Length: 285
Image 1 (cartoon, rainbow, N blue to C red):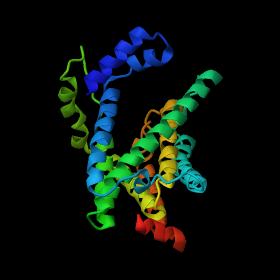
Image 2: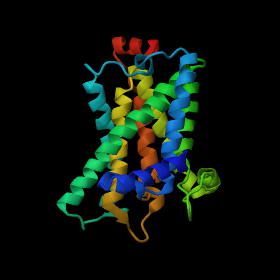
Image 3: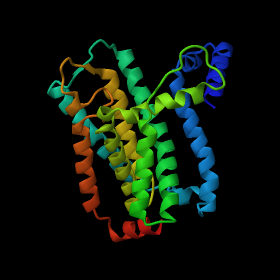
Image 4: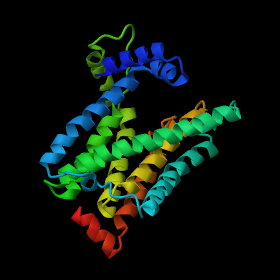
């Protein structure tokens, strides 16, 4: 699928000279690989969910947004505070340094891009991983086991490396790139703690879904994380001889600081108890 999406973007750039299609056409090939995986997963997920008895958006956890604002904002606050704390500490102690060579227009553009990406990706991935995979698994097994499996799948997909195609893009370019995308699992320094931080993130998002019975808190928290990941990467840069094992790189979540913050957040979430009304809703879902 990825080569087809790539060629479609080039064709669109020739027909429409606007900024959107031009920037889309210049995206690296791995971005089209990511979108192809997501499209394929969503397309195949729905028939499977129908077999498991998921027949509506409500069954996925997307109930009417009326009255869900507090959950969405609560999740957003948790996402902002957790990774925001890691970002702030990293910059304060010199693990990363701020980039100052930006004008107001550039800052605004980055802010809006991060906000848009956070909103779109959070909704799509929560529907896929929590409303889809976790929801489907917990219908056929004990929900803590389903949560663990779904979280590992979530980490696995996000830990794939971003290899790149050199030369022309052919119909088989996506298949040729797959071995390079798996190379990250041979790199212990990248695997620990990055992979485990992603698994913790999956556990937190799934636990929020289990406890609230809807996807809104998970979407908010996920969106807050993605916003920080995009913002942090754009506005900070490496510091020579910095302790990257602790503070990570521009990815933010590949250091031990992020791992322990997420671990602490998970411990707090496990002890959190919902009111009886909300708890019954969550268990019935």
